[in-house]
Length: 407
Ligand SMILES: Cc1cc2nc3c(=O)[nH]c(=O)nc-3n(C[C@H](O)[C@H](O)[C@H](O)COP(=O)(O)O)c2cc1C
Image (cartoon, rainbow, N blue to C red; front, side, top):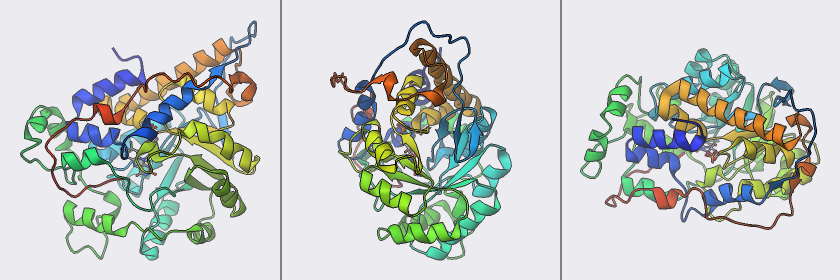
């Protein structure tokens, strides 16, 4: 029976080949930050008010001028289409059915246009600035033409994080069967059969790129890996600001200085994020950084918390600390792997029901009116052992040198 995000995770784990599940769980280096994202929430305890009429609870919010049924945003996740055929389209439809925003990754399997055609939901497009700025501009123009509402620039991938488990697993695109994973794949024939109906197993946004020397999945993967640019700076943010007239969102902000700089360049929203612990290890948990960023922007930009949300109560804590909304990555991917669109809808329903129950028990029926008085922010850091650890739970298969494809 599935009643929690963790139940969805267990189901996803059973349905996916280990190599693919490990890719979803993947964390950089020692996994300190992925654990800190969860542990951080334990530092914040509630201050509940009694005898408040909570017969009507409202978790709607507004973000970048739009009224939203829920403060939960499905964050950008590369290769979501490896978890279910047309995975990005299914997740975007699930978001639309629950009034949530879906963010399409540059590194998606479904294309910008396919996902826009599939879902009427408010869509955001997540961008990596490519070495070739004309290619970058082309992505921005495609997103604009397809009706994406906001451009979400990810700023925490100047180089790829070190996800050792993917390297040990020889995680490649297209997924390849080799000696060390053949039994694993055979145990998941259901996934193999489902994926056989997938239109492709590569980065869809680049299949027609004119400079591809090889148009198969390996050639496209090589091309995209070669396009990540370590020289991206604030000048590129200014440039994007000049070519994108809609809301601009920066994802991957973890300190006050960067938050102020972004606001000074006219960025409308910041995502406090450490990429789900997949990039720089030993960053603090995202919730621990949130107050610093909220205080630095002084209401001049909206702040979104991303990383470690597994319960509706986590969303309530983040909103009380000053976030306007929360992004989730793995929670909706677990739902997608567990049961396609219905699984993503279930993930959203679980989080929303938990949010409502928390608001009622807290004596604060309106999410939008939460503030820091709903929390005991000075609670002792009673840190339980980490509730999740990609490092501990990943498999240990024979090390193999292979092309790692990270997003
Ligand atoms: C499998 C996977 C792929 C991801 N790909 C991207 C990506 O392409 N672009 C991006 O900005 N963030 C990417 N992320 C990071 C997520 O957007 C988000 O920051 C992170 O998952 C939040 O942590 P959570 O999984 O604990 O919710 C990815 C995360 C996962 C788990």
